[in-house]
Image 1: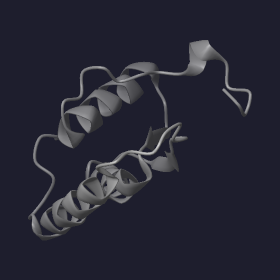
Image 2: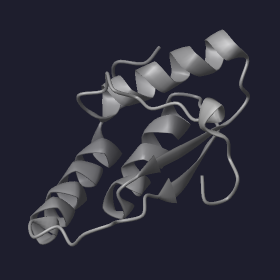
Image 3: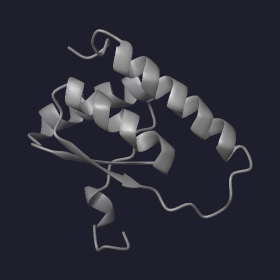
Image 4: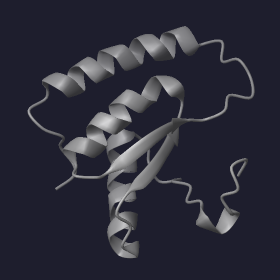
Length: 99
């Protein structure tokens, strides 16, 4: 919005309970609307795994960190968890759940 993107052009994923579900939903939307690339917005610590997952799912995507309006007390925990999750995604044979 701050960069002038109109509200009607923004799509909020409210179905994704995890990264895989969110990427599936994004891929379905892209295919349905004929979008050739996506802009994925999330917490800064989550963007690397989103990008990796999109790449493996064949989705051309750029990532942007969401503006944080308040400090998250558990952020160190979330970052540590994300480091472990990213490592797991790296050693997985392929992204499961998106075909």
